[in-house]
Length: 328
Image (cartoon, rainbow, N blue to C red; front, top):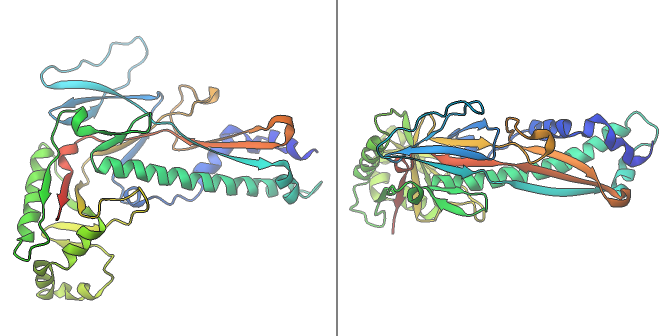
């Protein structure tokens, strides 16, 4: 059959390509690998959230025309967040298809699928990198809106970010006491919710200043963990009840060199990711998936255009529980 006719095969339908791109082995960014974000799909491009004393909660979805869930009075307010639309495109020219297909053989479909899957992998990697960028922004108390702008959650919900200066430039700084300050700042911000620990994602200079600080080195030298001082300086380290790690960023996806962010671990719903459906006719009012992929013929049958897209909204529901740490 003609080379491009093969793309009418069900193997290249929206559902098949979407399944293929979601089945690509997932290589999450550091925040994704840490399991901080609870992921779920939504059916609409808007996510409604209510805030009570700086705490955000999702407004429940109800059937159309059914009574809405009542909004409690007092200091509560509701906001609508438009889910960002993140598409990426590629193209597969007819000549590229001719270069891999074995005309009339049983491997024709498989060969072209391999080429398409390679393109899907590249597009997925770009979308995952973008998702990590959105999550780093979320760690800093921001969210990415539908225009791509970073908007402060602290401003949106009229709360103040908690910042602690670790003063790691001074040998006299009581680093353990600073760690206790972090824990005591997190506890009231969680409103009574428990947490299993605190992980601190550090910028490069903050991390270097921490591991070289006199108090930290002396503490480790006097314990069985002294061997850690001779280990890989890029690894994590526990000190003062907190687990510190150097966040390995790239380009704009990074934490400020002299900054760190302390995050309570295992707090249900602290960070959420909501995936809206793609803007295709076939996906309207369906539950959103992490990534979609679709193809269509080019003009004059010169090849096919490929599109992959994700529609993720990342939010921190208790932004005051994320403590920003700084050092001169």
